[in-house]
Amino acid sequence: MFPPGTLYSPSQFAKMYPSCQCCGQNFDPEPGYYFGAMFISYAISTALFVAAWIALSFLLEEVTLLLITAVIILIVLGLLPINFRLSRVLWIHIFIDYEGPCNRIQKK
Ligand SMILES: [Zn+2]
Image 1 (cartoon, rainbow, N blue to C red):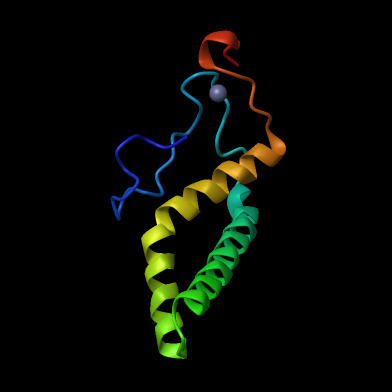
Image 2: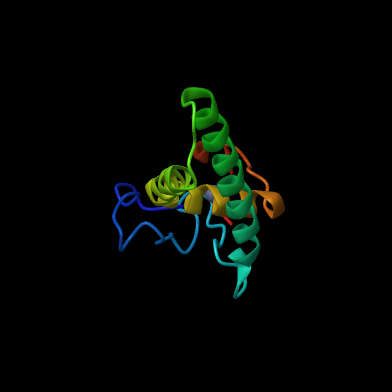
């Protein structure tokens, strides 16, 4: 779905191929298609927050608000491209089934 080598390029991590290079599936079927991916991204971020908070609580005697905020900001910024792409992949997968490896499917 995404061009290789662009994951941590700040201006290109959001770029997507217009359609699947293997089967021709349109990756942007309608305007605003990926609006729902925001909710998946939100869920992933929340899970990361909770995991970071629990991990810090186990590792340190005292977890201050400043520390947890800094750690969360680092995690969110560091994983932003991965979270962005993962949420879009999961979102499109809800509506469009994966048909298998490229050499086993017909081009649309
Ligand atoms: Zn495909």
